[in-house]
Image (cartoon, rainbow, N blue to C red; front, side):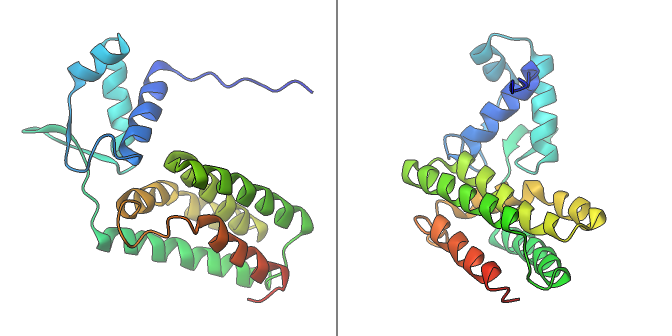
Length: 194
């Protein structure tokens, strides 16, 4: 079976690059990002850069001010905590809706994701850790089959990146324990321990 290739626009490529640089700390919280510099780096006009900035602002990673331009948003521990609690409560609700009984297919998908996560964790690749964490938890929410719950949970997709971004380089981040912590969740799901 042939894999369908997904093409990205220039502004999407720029947004992905900037997001990865922000998440890995190459561009720090509070640091200004200049349109002209990014345009020069990519060898493109400023239009796609503005589009990328709009996307990153929508995702909560940068903010625009008429005085300063675009800067990487400083995320407080309070904001990260609120995002985490909202996501966790929606996931807990999904688990209760299925009475803790998950299909074997879902459990196998989640185990495969944890294996990926181990590799990313070893390489300290934060963008890939975030992506695998997102897919792992998405399986929990989707299992209950409630489209509106999945939609509501999806509105917090960007919050996941923000949580990691805010905490990854602090003593509060479970660096080195990501895959282990997700194994604990799988163990609880396999025993249907709500």
